[in-house]
Amino acid sequence: MESRFDAVIIGAGIIGTATAFALSKSGWRVLVADPLPGAGQGATSSSLAMIRTQYSTLEGTALAWEGFHCWQDWPAYLALDSDEAIAPFHHAGVLTFKTSSNGFLKPHLAFSRDLEIPFEEWPHTKLQQRFPQWDLESFGPPVLSDDPHFGSSSGESLECVFFPKGGYCPDPQLAAHNLQRGAEQHQARFRFGCAVEAIHTEQERVQGVRLSDGQEISCQAVINAAGPHAQKINGLAGLAQAHNIQTRVIHHETVHIRCPQAASADHTPIMLYDTDVGSYARADTGENILVGSLGARGEVEMAADPDDFDRNLSSHAIEPLYRLAQRIPPLGIPNTLSGVADLWDVSDDWIPIYDRTDVGGFYLAIGTSGNQFKTAPVVGELMTALVNACENGADHDREPIQFLLPRTGHTINLGFFSRNREPNPASSLSVLS
Ligand SMILES: Cc1cc2nc3c(=O)[nH]c(=O)nc-3n(C[C@H](O)[C@H](O)[C@H](O)COP(=O)(O)OP(=O)(O)OC[C@H]3O[C@@H](n4cnc5c(N)ncnc54)[C@H](O)[C@@H]3O)c2cc1C
Image 1 (tube, rainbow, N blue to C red):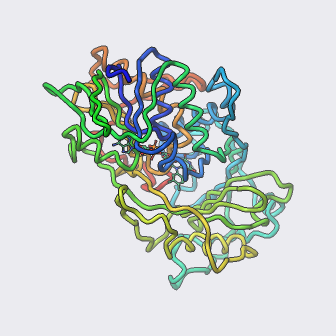
Image 2: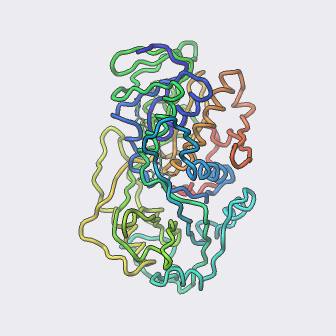
Image 3: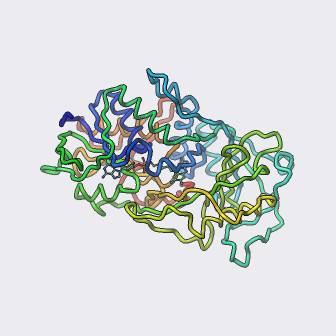
């Protein structure tokens, strides 16, 4: 195999493959290395891949809105010249509640107006008609099932907002594979079963990497897209704990359960972000739904080692189900749970890091905080803009790159995602970002 590339991308998850696709399209000779047997087999494979646009910041909202435009016409985004299987996208509107924890959605609705994202404020009667079996009183703030306040309603009716533009990709691994194929169409190369073991630098600049099969690769740029292994890769570049914003790895689990009552009366698919009970849910095959936690008082974050973590559901996995059963009383709680346990690569303020570093040619696309599947196609494009600008002499730290989102026409300041920002006070400090 060749030993000279323009750029090496570490990790073939949805972030690494999307970056490979965009960077190779812009003319870079790209190599992607991953120790797993194929694309999207790390955290990406467990993603619920829900595509929603409610974020706590304008930049996060704009990125998600642009991402929605990519997913809603995924075949056109990829423009593959083969007829292989393409990951499907299912349209589903997003239902969420106005609560004190989300500022009664005031910022989200202001960003949506600014960005022209459609939304509908549904009166209680409409919500009742759509979900006749739901209990629409407020139970919040979310608590664990052994809390004395669990299950007690305030008696107040919830107000809700419906965002019709959303959906999910039921096969996130296939989506990463599609991006691999797209990148290969532009001469990118992929090495599976092969980790990056060393990053070589000279005079504070990247020179190349060593792969686990011993091969040395020389390159101008290296992009850390290693997801939960991101801090280990920063260590290889001599940048362990070097930045103002750090990332950590936490265990997250989602449960698969039959619940016909989660569907609306007219069977229009919806995704639920129930900030009042602290659970989220989306449709899966048949009458099944997938459920996870948005956080609750007393919920303990489970730290994990990406090289040695438990893939079994923990005893806590049932908690978001108990909470969702407050909203959907007919939801039956099974004796045995099925679902997935995987990892989130979380930054201090739950906003990702998309940035250069103090080692010339070494870039970060990390800290995706459980919420960046939806943005990945756009992240690939913004990383390409960033790498191109910095490698052509731009001083992104002093004069941050302004990135025009091509489909929605908004410009975002990429300094927002800086490794050295102060933690963003607007963040929800949760997966909602
Ligand atoms: C359970 C769950 C539910 C989620 N739900 C949603 C959702 O509904 N909506 C949403 O937008 N987001 C969601 N997310 C978040 C989203 O899926 C992630 O942000 C995204 O998949 C992370 O992609 P990644 O490429 O950064 O990481 P990964 O997919 O983990 O890819 C990183 C890759 O790096 C490789 N690697 C590690 N070390 C090395 C090395 N030394 N050399 C080379 N390669 C290496 C790994 O093998 C891995 O394949 C969810 C995540 C989880 C876990």
